[in-house]
Image 1: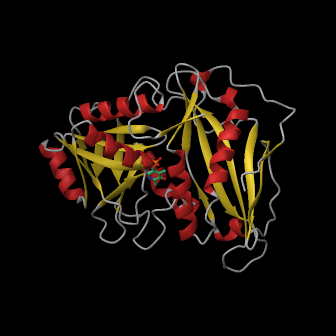
Image 2: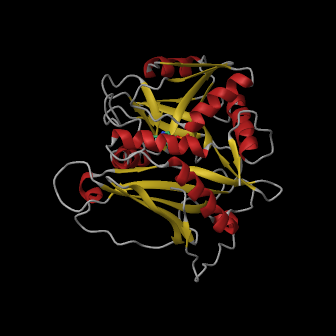
Length: 355
Ligand SMILES: *Cc1c(COP(=O)(O)O)cnc(C)c1O
């Protein structure tokens, strides 16, 4: 396809004056990218239009049966003012894999990437400048057939919206406290855990609320069968360090194959650490944390990049990891990965797409 029609807004919004108060996902830029899909016709009508509401029929299938998938990636501003994306093609490829599982059409990834680049060029002034800020990118696909009855829709809408976001950590990295969820589960093997489908997040809100009431900032999910093996945390994959060795749950179909996870595993090896994927028993992890064998734990994801774990709680027990602060490996990986993303360090893996 690749023929993208652009309609510019004649009511440009005021940009936020204070980039230190951006927060996350609260304001959106002046334009959005849309394209439609219809069975037999494929993806069509790629277009950039002013950001705004669209009409949706109350009987649209997405509102009842939840065929909805999304992605999250970022655009970074380098010190020289230029803009760059980090592995955007991997996000779109992952979206196609989510789509396949949800019986939705494979994305036209080439048109989606070109649409994304053009959209960012149109809204380039919205990419914030302050250290640690970025433009968050949210591609989404929803089913649009009108009518009740559970089956795959024949019509879909794909859109991309953009939101300038603040630095995740205002004063540098900050350790989080994590609660191991032993009642509810997020996903099961054979299910949809490996997809970024909207329902996974709806299903996770209750446990998140309970953990927050107990004073924890995130939930660590265990496997859905034995409730014994570590899966992941909220919207982050989990890694544990034993000295110079990093271990992380292997991709088993129920955890999300994070692009940050993959990048961190590659960088860790390039930096001379050992990195292994396996099956991690929470009881062993917890015992190792208590004995001091486990030296660091951290989450990995696009939003926070690296999120060091200060405290881990399992049932009624709590353990402080290391000295409760930021581990050396967490800090090194954070500095290296954000260095590449913001163009301060060379990209030796071909991850950066300059605009
Ligand atoms: C998005 C997400 C991640 C992290 O993926 P990245 O590609 O690194 O941003 C991890 N777990 C879940 C459940 C997610 O939704």
